[in-house]
Length: 495
Image (cartoon, rainbow, N blue to C red; front, side, top):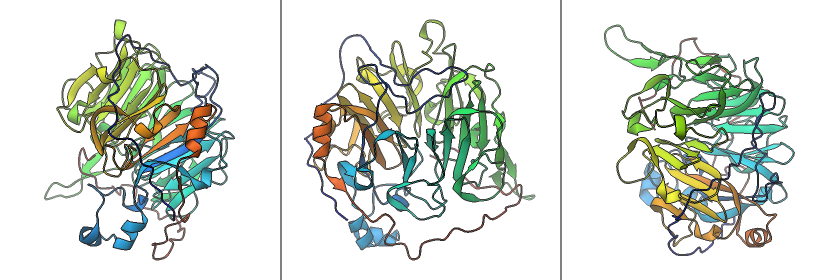
């Protein structure tokens, strides 16, 4: 394995701008009979983005990224079951690196999720490349072997939307077909089946044509072409929006609450029919945008992430009072949900609520983000504890990073309470930024000469395609049928 750290600049500059807010919406508007093309991103000149190069920063030991806290070293690593040799081999990438296996691939968009330790790149032909944690088959490669480098997913093409949960993935194809793979303990694949896991993408049990998908940690939301939402998976904290937590007591003489799987996609009630134009999922909450500019939220209400002034779970979609009348949100707004927060753009600027910084109090209602005032946005992403914005010729990052997710180089900030420019990418065109659980990925627009020339000089990350420390590669096993009411345990409100 070759890892050469790029020595970035010193501390990133604060990114606030004075003047009026100007936001460039990146998603091409869609009609009711045409799916949202996640790949159709508009560049600065107003033309459709033709693809670019992926850069990656953060943790590369994907199997252990889900562990809480900073990466273990020395005796602590051994105590956690991580050998010193493994810790030395899988060193965090503290600055953006190119990926060897994508050197000849022109990428149209990238995707992950706030709870995910895996991610995808989709090329200009609609083929998907997967890498990261794969213990439940979430990469869709037919096995449960970790991939250190992007690997092409077979038998799935024309991908227009991808989203990743904690250990599952869902895809949408250009013809409106939706497919899923990975962990299915709570029915989050939406296949209608009660098997524990599926290592290759299978079609979901929904007859409606789908145009986009968003995954929470253990649930999934599909947006139909008609403009309705369908949900499957864990209903903990009301995440499915159907009025129930789907929990039950398994003990007759004491209280032991567990979660009942919901494997078949069901319509999310409480939202005007045929009106939803966008949806985003956090670890255990969801927000959606309707065609009249209204925003609805439901699920876990801790830290005020739902925007309703109180820390209370909502079992059904509830309209956020801030975004009404003259504060209605444009239908092509950019929106994202992280581990404990929500963020959305409007004609007035960027609003955020919940816990959006590693320090300070949480915000119970949507509040104007003056740190990002005046920027023209292309992309917005929220990870478990880190956040990213692609705007103009800057990439802006902040949050609590434990694996180098802020990509500032060995001398850059490890944690940033406020949005700050990423020094190694300053002056370059970042088309998209994606924050996952322990890493950040960037899609660079190499049609710009300066960006192309600079990116070519970045270090290349090379590693064996599979984990060399695996005792024996897990072979695909036949899915195990589980009792119809077999639940999965999850602590309430866990992030």
